[in-house]
Length: 253
Image 1 (cartoon, one colour):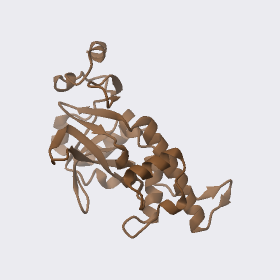
Image 2: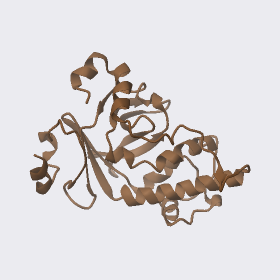
Image 3: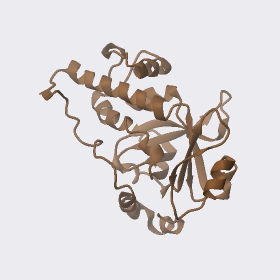
Image 4: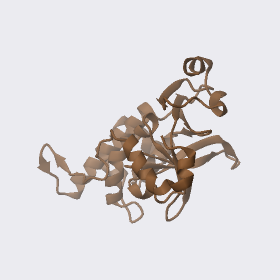
């Protein structure tokens, strides 16, 4: 675990090394060439390549539905924390494809497995190569909620600076603040905005810390009741105890 004083002295060059030591059990699917094979036969046509991505979108939507949608996650690091929700209308942007469908309809038919190749496409803004790179990682998105990850602060991209992001060094989820219809911020809640498959996210960030705890709950209940990740050397800080249910608190404090 990297301490606060450690970051203050020289966080950037040590961050990548430290995270790699902690996050050692990841597969190498992301960042590798995604070979387009079906039953051992190389797929050469654009239609066949698009079909592979269609299947990846469907699998990603079903994973998103089963493990993320309808749940909130509480990330705790030191005496800081934030919450993340995964609305269904955020799924589309994470895929890296274009569609004429609404975000909710795209997610709905993808989850049902009835998305067709004619219902999504690519453009200069959302190129095929980008979707090809993102989708294998989108299928693994739950890894950012159930394993040790790094919280990045003020990650800079060409267009935006993400106040908070979550990364496992293979892929990074850029977060945006949740706001209501009157543009007022909703508590400490963030939403997924961008899935980035690159290791430079760490270097583009102002600071970062390894997560100490990750909790989850059904979005319909008031308090968190499931502990997903715990640094055994740490105790649950006072600042989040009011967000946890009594049973969980008694078990881990």
